[in-house]
Length: 591
Image (cartoon, rainbow, N blue to C red; front, side, top):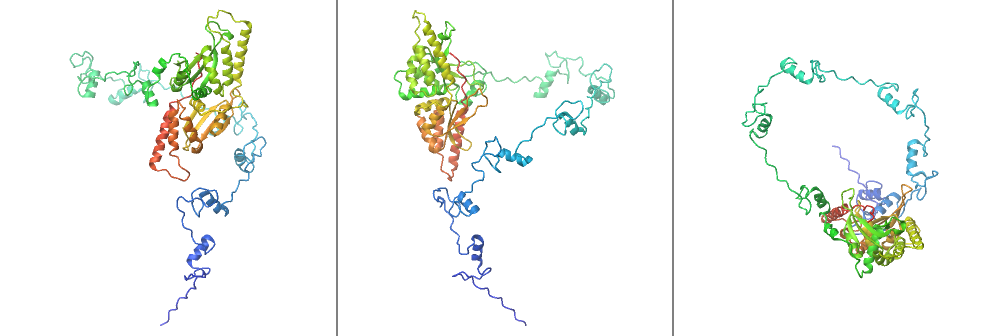
């Protein structure tokens, strides 16, 4: 019997201290796999990083993903071999090489538009369009494709011939062949009625006399002609609907009217008419300021206002206020105009606060907004009323200070009623000059280059109550923003709270550019929200929601629990509900 050869024993691993058999390159399976994975058979796998550890790169606080590095540095290590190597784009910081294009370069020295055009046509510059006439004789249209105009090109696509003429429209349908019938023929030369007679009786002109012809309805007290089953049409329908020809119509619900006091419109839902029901769905109430506005007659300004109250009034007037002159009641001359100050907004709360602080009167505009919301206006007119308000208001104004100073000088030159003396030529010319100065100040108020003074939190709260906006963006970033055509207000808000100011060019020459100030982020926006809440009036609810939302914002890399996500979603819905209740105010109507 032949002996079985013994298997050759494998040599041990060449790594010191390892007794495992070698399988390749003199290493065991463990050290060989280490060499394949890392390039070094002696490298041992590092333990997985635990949550909460920071990246090992200096000045990087992002959470660890692998090998002690964050996601960004780990990708750089895999791509370049060094976690601190940053590869910049070749065209970074350069403009497009096409003459006349100032867009940043993206690839091959061209911007995205010219690069896409080069990929599509092989040339980054647009091809010059040559206007050609249609090649079809007698056609004056411009060629759009294959040398033909749009009409001939469509004929070629549909019929294969650009000279194809469309067929004439079919003639009208023939009339029914039955004598005395003018209906259109339906089948076999007959109309639908005569065709159905032919199918039922074999003769299109045969008529069937109803069994109930000449009889009255069999229901006692009914004198209508019987049509079916000895009953008239009304009783037969009751039989079909209720099973009894004597069944009467069910009594309907009693008609109700709106429960809102003073409203006699029919009720639409929840005891309210359509208009009040929509207000409750949109705002949560009908209009709580109606009674206050009805009683808000002309009053004198409140005595001993604090500096913060004057600053809030100045901020609101800088945002939504308007100075002007109204024609006098006795004459329409320019020098007999009546000075006035007004502010217009959909929400009545800030206007009622102006009414309580500065006096004047509040009224509702005749025409509502496009959405059907009432527009309210606060107005203060007359030289005597403005002489008591403007001297304390002007030091806090930022945007409309020049207009207010000219208006105050005009008011000081006016005399009260019953003075008994006619105006001199010098006084008339002085008033006309002041009106011209006022128009010039209003026309140049939005021009850049004018210095913006320091503002307080009360002024900012008043300005944002008028022209500000608080919202939560789609990326769940709470934002405070304000837009204006005057750069001084945006620059003042930026100097007070930080943020960015972006200039948007006008679409037409008749409009001024818009300056948008935005403030985002918990670190910068939360202190501003905390400073604005004590002074806000019309938008305090939005500020409080924004502050509560900031409490749910966590740092990068931290996950939110389910109840925190539900709370943020609820706060977003509340903010959206408050924002939908507001709309842009209409231009002020002269009182």
